Length: 216
Image (cartoon, rainbow, N blue to C red; front, top):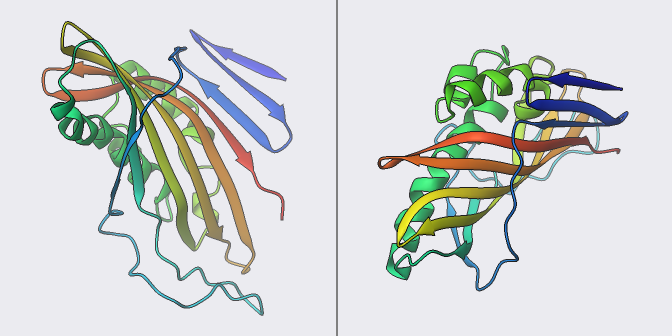
């Protein structure tokens, strides 16, 4: 079953999988990756050594995973000393999207403005249409607790004569949540985000993402 939108196909691949696309892009194989991590959002729970309960209602008490960001490719004459600055600038709208889109509270639509604040207007409009993939809206209202167990971003940065103009971000998210009845649900979101630079700011202008419910 396939539903098409202007320049953006969405399809149900299997019963437990959804995909959403609003752009396509290519990149070469990575070489010499550089990795860094950033702390989770301030709203994340404090670290705890308490294990997830397997008897009675489940309580997710572990902390969110740190955001891991690495530059896998940097071409076009960019000085390597710029890597740290670029990594921070490009990952900023991605981190904002992850925190707002997948940590929404009782109303999963309440944080959409914040989730897509770092997106171009057209990309944000399409991402809202595809919110079952681009956010936690499909389950948010039914979850009493959400933990992001993995958030990994790989950046492929493109430039001409030392001037950076675009990037592709490979994204991997693993999310766990507790439903009111106490059962735990898990899903992953993987794919690519496409970013462009406007002055010193970076924006997401396209995406190709897939959501997979994990069977337990």
